[in-house]
Length: 316
Image (tube, rainbow, N blue to C red; front, side):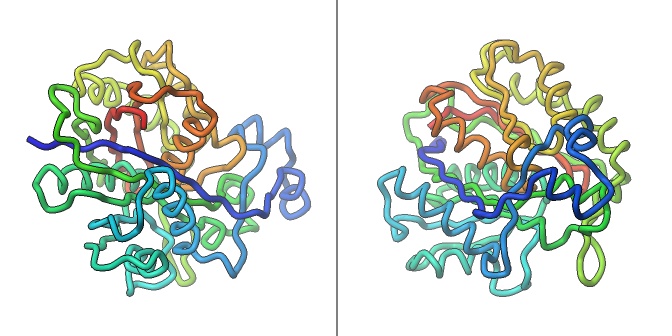
């Protein structure tokens, strides 16, 4: 059976940086309050002239360049997002148009913060089934558009950005495919713990409920992801969790048992960028040379809908 692998990555963030000091001038908060509770120092915020599809296209173009490919080489575009301004054309169709693609299949996936790992699994399954050979998988969200900037409990968390991966067929995958088996699921009865609702849409969450769920329920699931990939956590070179909150990332990573892994902590500089957080954090690790090509990396998304999805991949 043909497997698949990630061959290149790219990321994009708006130029405007919003610091904790900036937020302290907007709401009743402080740098000490924010860093002690969520570990975030800065976040990037896009302007009205930076729509989600533009950010996604920038990240995708960088990934294509890194892969040595043209946009016309891609036959599937998947965009994970929960902040599309319009219902149609889809975000993936808009990105394909921006990149000048010929006739790719296009599909949006809305699983909020675990969207990228769901989309990566979908690309892997599609390639394995023979329905595609080269895919662009993108996570892109503009959380600044849906945050209530008067609510200090949520506005300090969010940032904007996009990350992209080029995924290709891997006929020589053997026993260790470039993208390992996905483990995904959700907790429907707790879905309201993270919400984007209303007109205009606004982000809200039950922070303590999400924290307890993430830190207690997710580590054994992540260890099972490793088992499905035929690897023990001690052999992981890197762990890239959804960049929700440093107070979630650190205990979850510790409980997974990846004692030799680099732990992605892009949340410190980028905030919570929802579906963009995992590909963006991974792209930066690779760009800085912190993970060698071919090394096993755990990707694990969680959050909105109280959904989760994870897989072990070979670092591009």
